[in-house]
Amino acid sequence: MSIHKLSRREFMSTVVAGLFCPAKVLTAKSNDRVSYSLIAGTGSQLLDSGLPGKTETWCYNGQVPGPLIRLKQSETLSVDFHNELAEGSAIHWHGIRIDNAMDGTVGLTQDSVLPGENFHYQFAVPDAGTFWYHAHQRSSEQVDRGLYGILIIDEPFPPDTDEDVLLVFDDWRLGQRGLIEPSFNNLHDIAHAGRIGNWLTVNGRGSETIRVREGDRLRLRLVNTANSLVMPLTLPAWDAWVVALDGMPVQKPLRLESEISLAPGQRADLIVDVSAVFVTEASINFLHRDLSIPLVHFAFAKGKGRLMHQEPPYALPPNSVSPASSVPDDSYLMVMKGGAMGDMTQAEFQGSLHDIRTLVSMGKAWSLNDVVDKPDTPILTAPRGSTQEIVFENHTAWPHAMHLHGHHVEVSPEMAGFPTSGVDSILRDTILVPARESVQARFVADNPGKWLLHCHMLEHQSGGMTTWLEVI
Image (tube, rainbow, N blue to C red; front, side, top):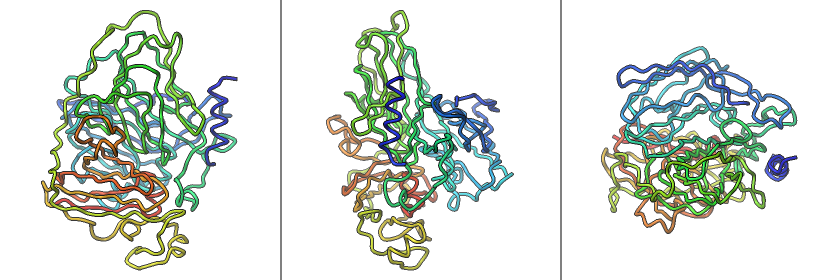
C-alpha cells in the first residue's frame, strides 16, 4: 500500500463527512476571435483508481474540469453555451473584468438558461492571467458536481519557462460506492465551514505526475475550485516565487518559502526552479492537521534543463487595473454575522425581519449588515472612476472568501498572506477574511453595471452571505 493511499484514507477519517478524458471541443479562431462550444450535462468519470468505479458528475463537454479555454490577451472569446441539464444554469467567468451583461449571474445580469436552451457569451479579455469559469445558479450543488473549467489568457510575451503546468485542486464528498453524496445545503454545512469533501483530486483525478529535469524552470498555475475547503499546499524545497494572484501580476516576484494557501476560488501563478535536492521524486502536498497528502508528483527525467542557474524571474507585465486612491471617495463597513457560534439574533430577509430560528428553518444562517441574501437595492452605488473602500468586519467563528464580480480589489500584503513582501498592495478578486478579524479592500469602480459580492464558500452564499453593488 502506498503512502499516498494510506494518507488519503486517514484524510477521509479526519475530515467531515476519471480519468481526465479529453472530450471533443468545438473551437475555432477567426481574426482576433476565439470560439468554443460548451455543453452542460451529465457524465461519469473515474476520479481515482482507489474508488470502486466511476463517479456520476455534472460537467461541461463530458469532463471535469471542463475544456481548457485558452486565448491571448485582448482577443475576443465567443462561447456558445447549451444546457442539457434537467435544471437551469449559467456560466460565470470568475475574475475576468468583462461587460456586465456577460457576467453570468442569474437574477442580476441574465436570466437562467433553461433545459434545452442556449446562450451566447462574447467578450474581449482585457487581462492576462489564470482564471476559471463555473456554474452560477444553485452554485453550491452545480459546481460541487463538476460544472467548472479553467480559462487561461496568455501574455503577449509569456515568461521563459520549460513547462507551463496547470494544477486544478478540488475536493469531493463521496459515499462508499464512489458516488457523490446528495446532502447538499444541509444546515450543518451551511452554518459551519461549508461542504467539505472526503476525497481530493487534481486535474480531475487522484494525483498528477509531472516529469521534470534538474534545472528546469516551471510555471505552475494553481487553482482551488473546491466549494469551501481552504487548501494549504506545500512545495518541494526548490526556489519558488509567486508572480500572480487571482490572475493579477504582483508588483515583484514574491519569494515563497515552502507553503501557499488558497481559499475557494483563488488562484496563484508560481515560477519554480527545479533543483537536485530530491534524487528521484518530489511532490506538492495538501496539509490537514498532522497529515501531509501528496497530490502532485515530480518525477525526474534524465538530462539537464536549459535554464540552469537563472536569475530570479522578472515581474510579469501588469494588467491595466487603475490604482485605488489612498483616500477613498466612499468607505463602506460590511459586518458579517451568523453561523454556528455566531452572534446573529435576527436579520432582514426578503423585506421582512425574522429571528434566527425562523431564518434557520428557511436554510438561512448568514447576513451582511443584518440582511440575508441579495437585497432589492445595491449596498452601494459607485460613480464610475471613484475609489471605493469596503471594510469587511467578520463577527463570525468562520473564515469567508469574499468574491467581487467584475473588479479586483487592493488588499495589504499582510492580509494577502505576504507580510514581508515589500510590495505596497496586492490585487485579488477573492479575499479571505479570517474569523473574528477585519480586512480593508479598495478598488476603482471603473466597470459599469450590477456586480455580485458574495462568500465563495458556496454553502455560505446559499445560506445568505450575498449582496450586490452598482457602478454607474
